[in-house]
Length: 231
Image 1 (tube, one colour):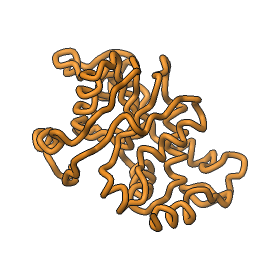
Image 2: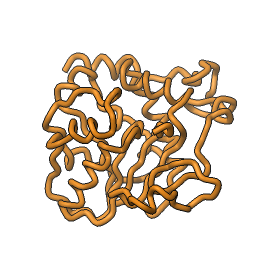
Image 3: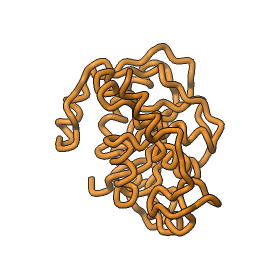
Image 4: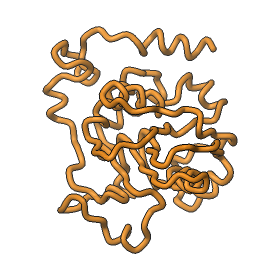
C-alpha cells in the first residue's frame, strides 16, 4: 500500500509546467511542448487488422486477409521507437505516471469512431501490480478519459496467473505462456476496446479477445500507444 502511494505523490498528480520530453516550459500546451509534439513519429497509413505500414489507409494487408485476427480493428499511435519507447519505459518501471496521462491523450487524438461501450485496460497480476505500484494500461486509460468521455471498466478482466515476462519469448512461447492466465466476468457489452501500452506479437490481445467473444461480446477492438512493427 505504501509504494503505490509514494509513486503517486512523487509523479502522479504533480506537474511543474515543463515538457515531459525536453523539460522546457510548456504552459501553453500541458505535458508536451509544441516543438516536441511536432517531432513525434506517427503511423499514418496502416492495416486496420495488425497496423503494418501500408501505402493506403483503410486497406487490410495480405496477411490479415489470409488469416484475419480475432479482433475487428487495431488502432495505435506510433512505432515503438523514441521518444515513445522512453515514455513507456519510464511509465512502467520508474513510476512516471504523468507519462500515462500524456500517452492516453495522444492515443485519444488518433482514435476514430465508432466508439466502444467500454475500454478494458489489460490487467496485471496482483503481485506484479503490487511490486510496480500501478498498472500502466490503467494510467493510459486515465489520460484517454481526459480527452474522450469513454467508460473504463477495470473489473471485467482479471489476470489470475502470474506469468514470466514475455519480452524475449517467441510468438508460440507467448501463446503457451498466456494459457489460462486470464478470466473474464459476465459481460453486458457488445462492443469493447482492449487497451495496452505496446503491442508486440498480439498474443495477449488475441487471448483476451477470444475470452471476451466466448463471453458474448460481439466486437472487440485493440488500442495501444505503440506497435513493435519488426514483428
